[in-house]
Length: 171
Image (cartoon, rainbow, N blue to C red; front, side, top):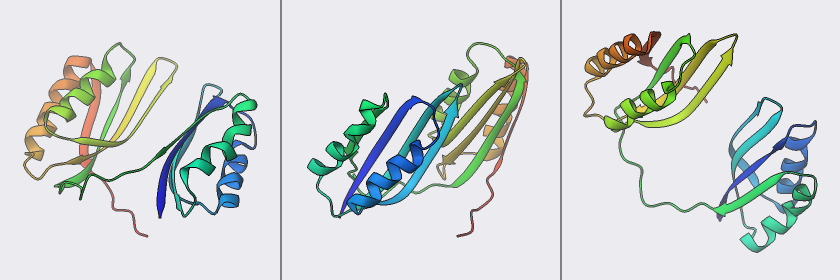
């Protein structure tokens, strides 16, 4: 079984997801994880798919999308062993006036305690900046201490921020 990480980026238009997923299904590749969004008129997608198809067949099958102005990359997914145990999954939310350095400051704070950001979304509308980060934290992190650091950082940035346990997805 092969696993591939595929990214597709370009000007948004109707049908990109249908085009990509049709090619992958036609190859016998099952789409297992994905995230797709539109950012100011540009489409961005990252997905992981699995199947018996050799890598030499995947990129050529997606090549026609490049002719339509999309940038497509394919890389084989490899694992470096079992994932490190996590202490919990948390959500950091931040809202406030836009200013330079918000993402850098928040992500540095999380990285410094060993947090692994698994999803990050930001939006800017009418001068209001919103950031939502999902993060896996190691068992060694003092959550109350980190929450206090988040509040201090928010005060320094003149924004509102909170850290809370993430709701568990039920499958």
